[in-house]
Amino acid sequence: MTRTRCSASCALYFKPFPPSSLLPQVLRIYISDEADPFALHVLEVGEEEYALLRADQGIRVDYANFPGKLIGLLDKCIACQGEDLPR
Image (cartoon, rainbow, N blue to C red):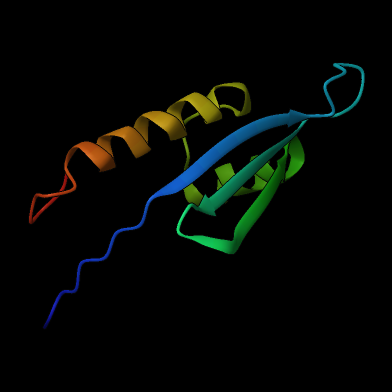
């Protein structure tokens, strides 16, 4: 089996939406590639969708802590980028 490595610089933004706490919160995740102005991926995850995803995937993090934990996971991926078997 041949493994190919690729990497790209990208920007990742988290925005709770709407900013008011009276309405249900939706987390918007924006991923863009600085080298490709046409590359933009947007993911919206509401509390109800996250609850389904959490149950289906066995995620142990609650909705309020999800953005911070995802950033931590991505930081770990970046830190072990050059390793053959990342942890």
